[in-house]
Image (cartoon, rainbow, N blue to C red; front, side, top):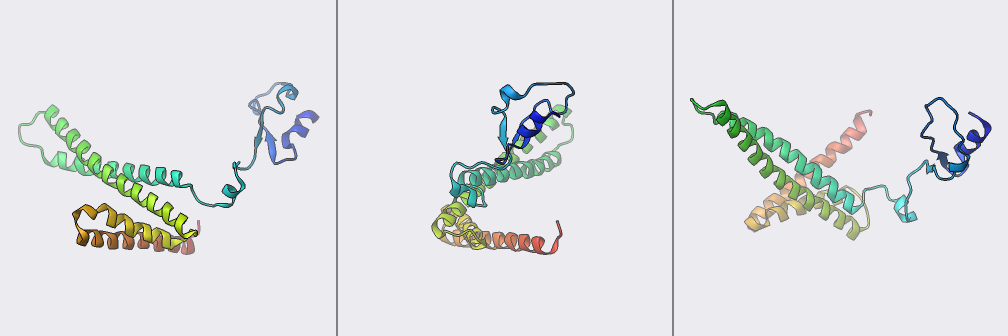
Length: 190
């Protein structure tokens, strides 16, 4: 590495020189492109307020919870559908008919559970982000309140009694997850 490369590699402003040919052997003159490939070494934020926040934005939150819940539901429902499709075989069925039955059951159950859990993830993420914005703090109470509201909203069409029971179950489930997360942080060395 020559002296020009060494002085451009640190830059002194929290940036490093991007070198696409770093591990290749040969000579390349970096002076014409030195300022083009200055990449930051830390995350960049448009506003300074964003740098102080240590959580995902509401859009990232909705995308994460909805997508991961839908994926988990689709995989879990697909597994349930696979078992149902295998159990539903009848004597004398051809291989083509058995395969079709398994695929139909897997797709139906996976789609059904995936959509349900995706909606629950969407409701939870929206409520959690709204509660954080309304309260102005980011603590575990927001998660429990969002779980309570999610359960109540998800079962609201079934009547007030079902909504209250589902809300209580949602709040308890999220409370258990939050308590488990705190226990893991405290007792499991990672």
